[in-house]
Length: 553
Ligand SMILES: [Zn+2]
Image (cartoon, rainbow, N blue to C red; front, side):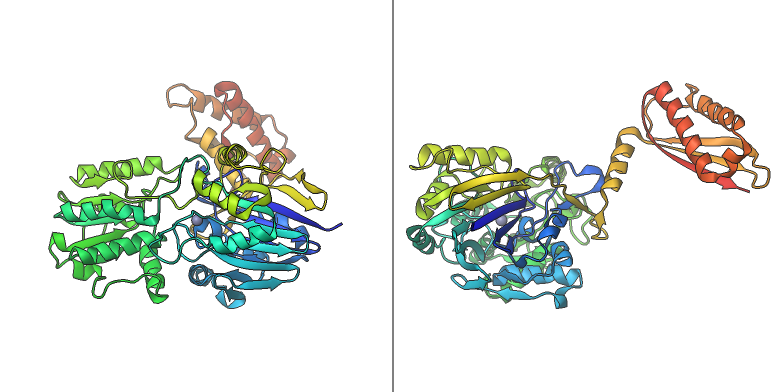
């Protein structure tokens, strides 16, 4: 029997790491390959990606990777994905430019086949016919996908909001969506990020009045921090700067790069002579300059953080400066942002946050946008995606209660690792497989083994003990006293004798061992570790990581 399988690898029941396999017959396409930002930043790991090994069993079926838009939670894992599965990639011009930069950093640009597509292009990939539908979002050049298969059509919204008046580009292409609605849509896979928010999401244009006020009432320097990918927002700042006789200088590598790409592609229309270098900006009066800076999330190495802490080369935030934080707080970043704001206040800056004025709007569909989406696509089944479980659930409840014709039967909640199957008889979740995430080391861009994370976790909770024992190579006799040092182990201080007793326990253990037990170094090491472990557990009740070193002389 014909069937379609939907297999999410990430992005369902969590924020970020969006990735989904869609299979028909013996062909499978993958939509997005996103990064995740683990909220707890466990043990020095800031980045995670989906566990692509899961797709190994479908290796022979995989035909293409489709990228809906250029946010990191949709393309951040691209190099890691392509290293495992070198598939042709289909995406828009702006997303492609961002993807190319990423692949270049990983030195793999020459090995990858990238197809640039325009809105309403149709890519025929085996049994799949995919139309790219222009979607409005906080970024530009974004797509929803109409994925036609012999069994029926799926609509994957990507990230979207229904913006009737975006700053750059046309509104959401509801006309094309409606055409599919008329022909019949089997399932709508839809963004849930803002499903808990009532009403419509304001247009990207909605922030203009508040920014106009800020520009007209400020006489000092203005610093605007926003996501470096928020093109509509950047365009607004360039336009207002021009209108109010200010120049714009862009600080921070990711912002400079993105502005350069968007300027080259003609996505940003930067008014003539408005953008200047940092060096040029230093010669201007305070009321003649706006700085666009990275670091709205309080990131410790970003431009705004450095300006706020006096570590930016050649300039710092001073009394009289106005700092506009034009971004939402990504879950998990609250503390960093709070510290950043503290530093800015200490320097006497005036801070304008989202809470006080309309200087930021979301890029995701609120409940009334969702209603428009569902009523236009009129799918047989709705599958909420992109969001924590709470958001998926509320998405379902909202549609059940506010859109006619939807009930528990045709709004389907799935989680990462579920296999959702459609066939002529209907839809069902077949199985759930446990999916681990893969952690990435930011410095080396390499994968971090799960064992390493487990070790770090142990270190964080129990600390470490190092034991050094010196033995005579010939006789096997122990030389001098065992040396034990403690790092971050609770219950140990120099006065309570635990260290002395530990040393004594080890010395006694060694005394009781036979010569062969000592000359087999691996056995000796393991024996010592076990003795010390037992002792520490009994004495202080913790399980630190124990590192044993045998020195032979
Ligand atoms: Zn997005």
